[in-house]
Amino acid sequence: MKYKIIMDSSSNIFDLEQVSFSSVPLKIITDQKEFTDDPNLDLNEMLTYLSAYKGRSGTACPNIHEWLEAFGDAEYVFAVTITGTLSGCHNAAVQAKDSYEKAHPGRRVCCLDSLSTGPEMVLIAEKLRELILSDPELSFEQIETEIRAYMKQTHLIFTLESLNNMAQNGRVSPLVAKACGLLGIRIVGQASSEGTLQPLHKSRGIAKALKMMLEEMKKNGYRGGKLRIVHCQNEAAAREFLKLVKTEFPDCDASIGNTTALCSFYAEKGGLMAGYESSL
Image (cartoon, rainbow, N blue to C red):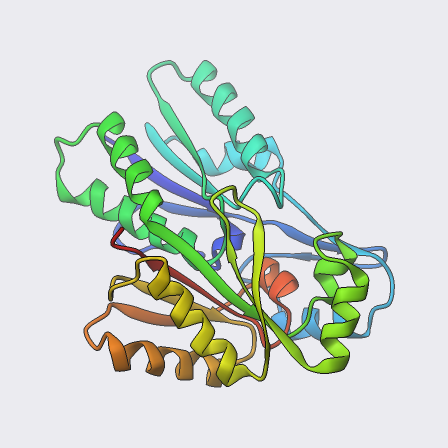
């Protein structure tokens, strides 16, 4: 059976070893310029431009044609998208699925709304790879059942230094964003079970914010499972957070990576995101 895993670019990964994989790019759009979230993007250029830009900015999801192109000639596709509360990615993927299955009887597409973004999507991709490679006799339906069950054990926690772009896109109040910037307050939040970005705490300083993140993870059932950390130009904080986690869970499977365009747009410079497994 010919399997393929496809994710929109909010996952921050453009390849996945050992399996057929594609990333479908989102775009960052201003009145004057457009940035495509793919391996050719100069992230520093985008962040520098946006920090000086005073006009409107937003994001655009891949269209149906782009999803269909990514499906290629795969017999079985698993398409994982950013939460539907932030983007129309999932709707576009579902429409592409309907068109693909109609045009190719016998082929199957499973569209999974991650109800999250970034490193939590990476956990889902890695689990799909594991299921695809583990047993050649495992059916498409069995893999779908397994991955949907696994997604109940994955979570996203984050801390943000700036809320400017969130405010521009109506995700938070402009007054709250301005106050946080003036007072040097960081937000600690999570992806809720409904797929919304849910603020949990306010913190002065990164050290306290990182401790809050770990405490929230433990409250939510983290016991040393997989941990995938990404940062927007804040490697020092990512390494400090990993050190905190490893102090309590020295054998955890953890890694650090960088945000690409979409997650960098929302997390902004200094932002940190972590996808993790719970044991609940």
